[in-house]
Image 1 (spheres, one colour):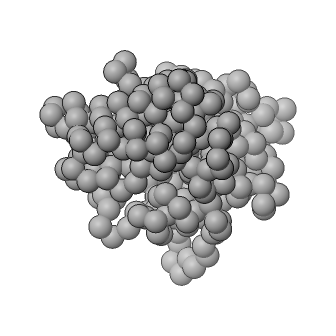
Image 2 (tube, rainbow, N blue to C red):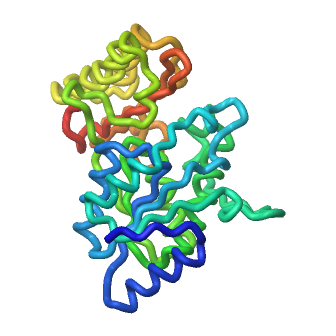
Length: 285
């Protein structure tokens, strides 16, 4: 049976009770509008824990004033139904005023990892993410927490957060889940028109070109970035970045890398998509 709670204190108590009953807690933080990618995180959580807690909270702190907070899809009833079908034990769905009560004024920030890539184009975004996730980690207590690697930089930042603050959290990065044609699953994909959905495959084509060149022996980060970027720029209306960086530092890669992160953020109309592949580690998209 899936229990739904709204108040932070009730969520904390339920997680504490689970550990008292000798369960290990698996945490799946989400902003709702659940799809197969989210459900894969639930499946992955079961490999690490036997009491699964999912959170559904569209976090206002991580949206800039010109971003899509009000437009972000909210499908709460179907989200809870999906969690129930997959045997999630606990769903935490707070209201914003429960997470950020009157006179809330604390912010949690991570340093250098937040500055490149997404940080250059969404400067307040990661402080909103790390603040809400720090709260969720504190409420949950010791657990294994699942994060999708489509948000690769976010995963690295939250891993750093838990490590630096000695949080008793195992932060697990889970593989990207894709459509049969390779497009990474995202709640924002539902914004795309039919023609935009077709053009979105430019991001997959770019990553595949970089993968193929890597397999053939190319190790120049500039060349790999250029190969990926040509495909993206030919289909997307606006490109924020196509980067080729070290997967651990998110900074410029060394010469002749053994692993290389190709990360992309680009716009189709009003919809912003991100994707990535770690060459030398991930399968071809």
